[in-house]
Every structure is written in C-alpha cells, then in structure tokens.
Image (tube, rainbow, N blue to C red; front, side, top):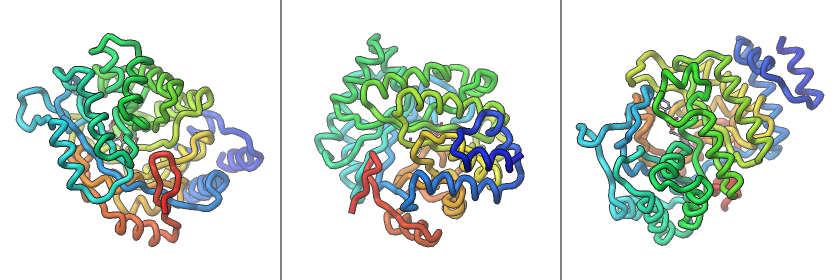
Length: 351
Ligand code: V47
C-alpha cells in the first residue's frame, strides 16, 4: 500500500484521505520517515530547523469551559485558580531573557471584558515593540465575539490594531463531533474553530493549526481533522505551521500518552497530507527533547521555542523542562545534525 502512495507522491500528486488512513495504519515507520523527509526537503531545501526565542504567558487559568482533557483550567474561586494583572504580565516579561515573540493564551474568564484583551495587547506591544505577539486561540476569539456582541471581523480587526501579529493554533483538538462532544462538549465546535480561522486569515492575520491526538479518537477522526485544515488552507493560505499535540494524560480522561511510534507517524502523516502548509512543528514540550530530534527525520522543521514558563502540558503531566535556553535549543538541533535557524513569528530568519 505504501508503494502506491510513494509513487503518487513521487509524481507530484496529492494524497487522498484514504492514503492518509493507510499512512496512519502502516507499521513501516522507516518508509514513512523517508517519504516525509523527502516531502520536507522539497519545501525546505536548506534543511533549516527553525526555533523562536519566545515566552509563553497564560494570563489566567479561570475558564468557563471544562474540557475533559485539560488539567490547566479552574473555576473561579477553586483552589489553584489564578489571574494575572496586565502589570504582572509586563513585569514577568521584563524579567525574561531576550525574546522575539510573546505567546499568550489563557482560559475564558467569566468577568474580563473584551477591552481587557485589547489593553493587554497594547501594553505588551508598547513595552516590547520588537517582539511578535502570537495570542489567543480561536476558542478565545470566539468567546470575545460572544461577550462583546461584535461580529468576528470587528473583533479580529480590533485585536490586530491593538498589536496582535498572529494567532496560535490551539483549541482545535479533534473537530469530529463523535470525539468533540465527549472530549469538550462546551467548547466551540470544529466548524466554528474553522470559521474563526477563516475570518482571521481574511482579516490578514496568519495563524497556526493544531490537532490533539492519542486520547479517545481513531485514525479516521484524525484524517477528517487534517482534511478540514488542508481544505481551509487551500482556500485562504493563512496557516503558517501545523502542530500535532500528543495527549498528556494526567486529566479527567486519564489513560496514557501516545507511544513514540504514534508520535512519529503523526508527524510524518501530517507532513505528507498537509502539502500546502509550510512547517510542521515538533513541540518539544510535549514530545520530549530526544523524540523531537527524531521528529526532525520525520518531516518536522520547527521546534517552537524557548517557551520559558509552560503550564498547560505540565499540569497534565509533561515531564520536560518548563523552558529551554536558546543555547540548549540550538544544541538539540545541532546534535540531530541539522542547521538551527532562529526565526521571528513569520519564519523570517534572524541573525
Ligand atoms: O489548546 C490541552 C492542548 C493547547 C492538553 O500555535 C493539551 O505556535 C495535550 O496550542 N495534552 C495549547 N495537549 C498548546 C498549543 C500550542 C503550543 C505551542 C505552540 C502553539 C502555536 C500552540 O494544548 C490547547 C489544547 O489543544 N492541550 N490539554 C493535554 N492534556
């Protein structure tokens, strides 16, 4: 079966959903790695591995939703609930080592007005004009539209005018209702996630996309998720990177993380199916440093960043460090015999 897919890819044809299912079902991970690496070489002939010096900030873990895979969120007043003021966030960033990007995502706070998010962006941009701001998942932007009673387009334009440069890909989980209704019934639907991203792309805001895998979904659900992302990318071209997020299991759902083999398959299948998205990120925080190196032989060309203060994965059991220095990240890439390339939020190389 892989031979037929190999032939198809070799002749420059796009693979189908049926082919993607066969990739996930295959145990021949060596061929998967070779196919994905050669697909990557066509997109990234210099074979750079990108990273960004960034800082992850989560303004609050108070959230009106209770997604069953999320160990980060709390209800208001619950033990462990927190909310940072804008001044506290600025102080935190002032104390951080040099960064080229700030990544901001948090819970859907029951009391914060839309203006609060705009004020946060303005304050960060004013203090750190050199840094790109990658902020707010589609779930948060949808929530802002609901609390402000404004159309999505207006919300997005206001965010952009306040300093938003691009949006992260979180909140996508698995779009298929068979999974989503059980995993996160209160969260925005898969179609709404896609509608928010379409509106962002049309408003000139680039975004990423993710898929949270390895919990209760099957390969069919993964492929249907990837197809919706590929279709939207054909329409808008607005996705910069795709990030498969391996499930971290210290949550209400429990279970185990996907195996390293599943992780590599997911990276390779994503690289091969999403022929229209330039970058696949191996998110070292969730994959681990060593498997992230191997993922660079399976089609990934970006390790995300220094991150510095990761909470979402760690509260769900991730055993990695909460952040890496730039030297450590470069070392990981060098040891995988690849060329590290420091980038900005838009994949322009720096230095
Ligand atoms: O939205 C939550 C996921 C996301 C768990 O776009 C979990 O550049 C695994 O989206 N196991 C946040 N995943 C992380 C994220 C991200 C990270 C780095 C870079 C970018 C980018 C995006 O993590 C959430 C959710 O989809 N998540 N809980 C869990 N237990």
